[in-house]
Length: 123
Image 1: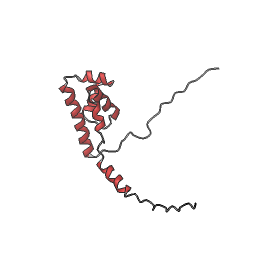
Image 2 (image 1 turned 90 degrees about the vertical axis):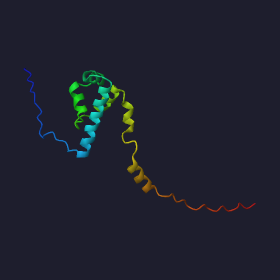
Image 3 (image 1 turned 60 degrees about the vertical axis):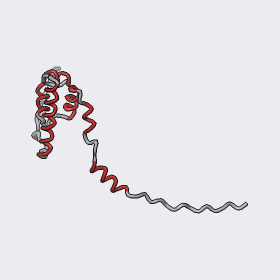
Image 4 (image 1 turned 30 degrees about the vertical axis):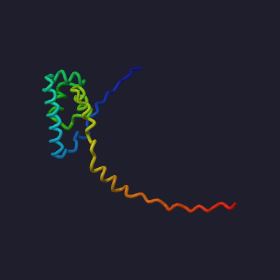
C-alpha cells in the first residue's frame, strides 16, 4: 500500500484590495511617518538599529516612515517604543469632544419620582 500525498496550492480567488482612505487620512499617516523619521534622525539612530529594536525589517520601518496605510498599528507602536515615544500612544483619541457631546445630549436631566408620604404608625 502506497501513500500518496496531494498538495494543493491555495490561490487567491479575490484580489487583495482595501477600501481607499480619505485624502486627509493619507496626509495624516504621511505626517506620522515623517514624525517617526525625524525622531529617529534626531536621535542619530540608523534605520537598521531602530528596525532591530522594534523587531521588524528595515523595509517595514521605511514603509512606516513613509506613512503607508498597509502598515499595522502594532508596527507603529513598536517603532514608537524603540524611539522611547510609546507614551504618545495615550494621546490617540484621548480628547473625544464629539463623543462627549453626543453622550451629554443623550443623558439629559434625571427625573426622580416624588417621595412617598409616610403614614405615622398608630400607638
